[in-house]
Length: 638
Image (cartoon, one colour):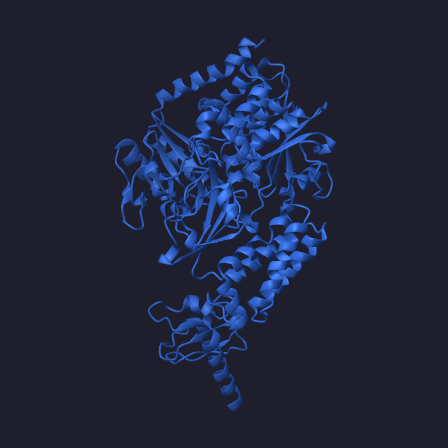
């Protein structure tokens, strides 16, 4: 039977918080994600508290440091609730005016508002900012309301309500049936049906079973899981506890990399708070179910994100993947049945239980249900974390949410799915963002990385860069990955240096297929994706590098030169003073010259040349050859 005191505890806390917040009509929320920490959010929050006391409005105004709001480049972000007034890039000098004008006089401080770059419109409310308008933030939305260090904030927003429902009103079979009916798929990369995964693990007979949260987020530029652990850690704990109940596990691990100090701090505190309230441990909320969570700090190896490598790391062994089957659900951690999902997947679980499988399954597409959080970075105006319904068009993310390409340049490609993802070209901007469509295009959902590239990006160099990353992160256990990725990098490097051969394209394709087919784990099986998709969609760039010894994007250093135009140079000395290798010579108000033998192609001369002058140019191909030939003759004559 349910213990009345423990079961009613959560409702009592919710009622008390609700009553207390009626008295404090205004709450100044300050984004406390890692990005805003770098911008000084803690100093901003303290300054707000000090100014509130100074202006004697502490009885009607509260200040709360919350999780990440997503619009990271606009930090520190401050949202004044309940109206949702959105102030961006707020500084200490702005605090006094915000309190006196917005809080006391109910006036908007226009200079702190977001300005829409195309229309120049000032936008007052967070929900009207274009970055948020097309998002559906069912998981990430609460980050802006919750103080992640206070469990009461989570409980106030129906936190742990799903756990109570599961423990006292549902059987484990009913829980799994709901998760299966919702269509929830794993958000860590492969997109396997979560309910089916749980069911397999539950059906394996064992006296001990484990639950693992994979927070080893290693993709360059991706930080979705980090922000959820930092901003709403209890949603992950509640999801894991529900999952443990469903499969019959009594112990769980959160595997989080040490490079995430704020996430480690907040999730550790959240576990301690949950234990104190009886939400973890023996006899949870008076039920017969027991479950505990331990935090495991990973050393940051990219291959540890692969589930069998992760388990080896927890066991104290080197993070090497192993052959499957047996799968972790059958024989996992210490040989026992183990269920592994990533942070975002676990955070979805309480939503499915609270709102129902039918509600959840109506979001997204027929085969890809719910929302997905993406880390939108690169050559785009609005960078940050975006949560969108599955099935949204790539164009909507890039232009409506992302605000288009920086400096009005042309969109060239976007890589989805992290370093092992594929590059999708501009003619596929109307691609539906879901598991099936991305796979068909040669890419993948992955954990949610989305790197935008503009016209100045060399796609051959992009493939080389990401292959070099995965090659260095390979554990080296299997030959196809260890040797194959090294050979792919060598061929790509040779092409970017202008030393490629026409047979290299065939070699790249054949070797990529061999690496995909022969590698032991997902790292090697997906590593060639950047090569295959760039050859598929940008073959002309490869041919330009190989046949014409030319880099169309003017990126590959061995194929370009920097040249000072004699008819434009005013002799300002800026390029000469900023050249790190003294490759530039000339006198004031006289034409300067770059010594091509000394030049290291750093681009400093181009960066410092005044825009009105624009005397420094980059050349490749025939023009480059002509300039080098002319310079060579001049040296011989001297």
